[in-house]
Image 1 (cartoon, one colour):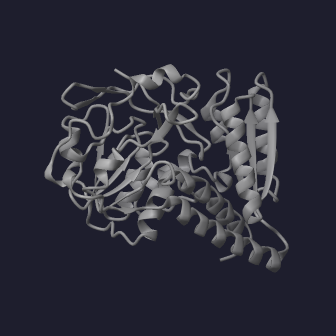
Image 2 (cartoon, rainbow, N blue to C red):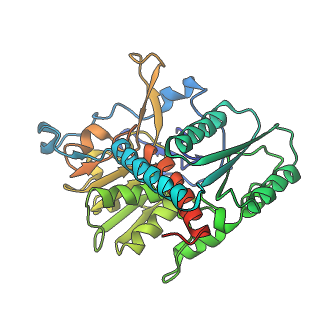
Length: 362
């Protein structure tokens, strides 16, 4: 059994997702989730790559496989670029109108190279659209009180409209206490319990929606896929992607099922879906036999697999076997270049929304 670590380079979160067991007949058994929510990156341990799933197209033979790929590619990179251009225009308009631009503060604790890279990417993204960025970098042995003090300062700083605490935090810190200290009005990551609670309630609107699930739904909207009345299956029930994605689909009047660690017959359930959102961190788990012809697939997984032809020794693939999906589905997101670019775009969007709300701008 291989336990897969999922690392999203576009998000503030590095999350451990569900382990699975794959048997020789390609049946997958979902194991119960155990362990901490936020752990270190897998990419630093290339030996684990050999434990991942078999080649994508093995042991899957149906008539559709003889045809050329026909699925539309949902290009998250181009959509994210378009969204950034829209945000940039709004920021310029805001600056001309009131002389103020949105501000995003990021707190980084420790010297993790992956976390530093994520923060650097967010800073570049802010600069590209005209959003001010503020960064606090604390040593690994900083106290929880120091972090809380900076959060408090940013909470009361009118030039800061969004606050993001880069995860994971050092083990001596209470992550939930720190995240809960961020004002809900500046919780642009969307993980504050009040925002999640509002998302779950009919008739109540969250101030912010978690960035990756929001990006998934935005892709469906931008490509014109109808959600209302469709059967949707979300694979994975993490607080980061799975649960918020299911809640968002439900708000769009989809009939939603969640495939999780205790689900029996996940393949059979998934095959009924018009829309599939997969966020489990298991490479090529969703095979062609899982997919209903004409389904739309949003693949959130980012998984390294061995590739001797790559200079890095590995390549990134999704949870869904892309080659098989392309011959059956109506549309599918690639990995990389699908959901990943949307996460930062949604972070910028949330920050802009926060600033406009603060100044009563439409």
